[in-house]
Length: 354
Ligand code: NAD
Ligand code: IPM
Ligand code: MN
Image (cartoon, rainbow, N blue to C red; front, side):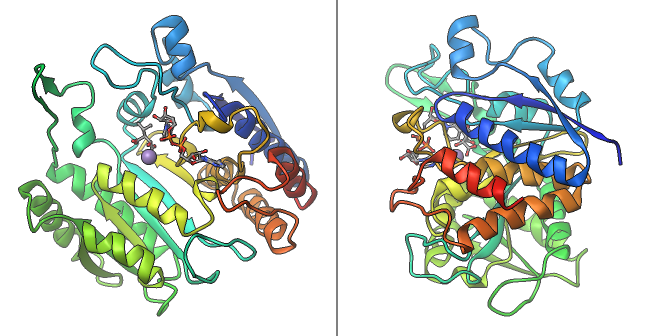
């Protein structure tokens, strides 16, 4: 294993810089304990950068992201920064997810001991991963919808190769896990609206074909509305879920509410030749700069980065430090998901347990 981990970091907007600072502090502590160093290249990007320069990222950024061992991104976005078409400027989803072809957006939802979610569940009951298709679906229309003064239209595109690769990713992921909390059985659930829309009918058809390649992993289906209900009412039945881009966006925030809030939820955007890691949430402008945000989403994203970079023992050390900080009662969350004693105190509690 090389003695240096090279990172590119986008600190982002709103709470992004304070979250990324927290994650880098934890990474440094983990690296020290594991005998390697972390080198950071700062890449400016996001809505503030777009406002200043007219571009969400500097030229050549994608190549720099491909050249490092890992990319850690903070949340971006300032709701007041708009493009002429009315959508937000400086969001990086379209640029990075499509640009790096990171087709699988991996969003683990796990209720940790010592954390209370907004629902009445116990730790151990909620432990699933949403695999969100990340390059097509409704989002393919990003920047390409059509509009008149009176009407606007975005299209939802599902392709066979797009579903094949993300479904395979979901089944491979299920093979590496220990099954649903309710019965320990490995399973992938396809979430769609194939009862209504033909794009989703294709999604389900291709999912079923891929499922047949994985006889050791169970496969089932749920319509998205029923899935929203089941994720709240009986989350223990889920192991891995795979779904279209927009559905994955919405259901992952719903899952976060059951696991202690958005600030508990990390993610990885993973493709065949590139990956980057970020919280699932946004830049939370109202609490930015106030030492209120929960940095765990960003810290656990750094943990996913370590795992992806082949540093499994460092990743395990990071995760265990986070888990113990909650289990010991050293980190407490407010009902709104904020950090009771502040972002910095959470960081300190985690670092102390590395
Ligand atoms: P948001 O996720 O920023 O905030 C939703 C709610 O959750 C707010 O109440 C916020 O205070 C709270 N919250 C979020 N993260 C938290 C944390 N770590 N700790 C404590 N509380 C937290 O969503 P929004 O307000 O709809 O969007 C704000 C901006 O973020 C917009 O510009 C949006 O486009 C952007 N956005 C970016 C990303 C990304 O960069 N990946 C993701 C989602 C939204
Ligand atoms: C997310 C975000 C993004 C999305 C936005 C900011 C483009 O909400 O990563 O979940 O909708 O994909
Ligand atoms: Mn989202």
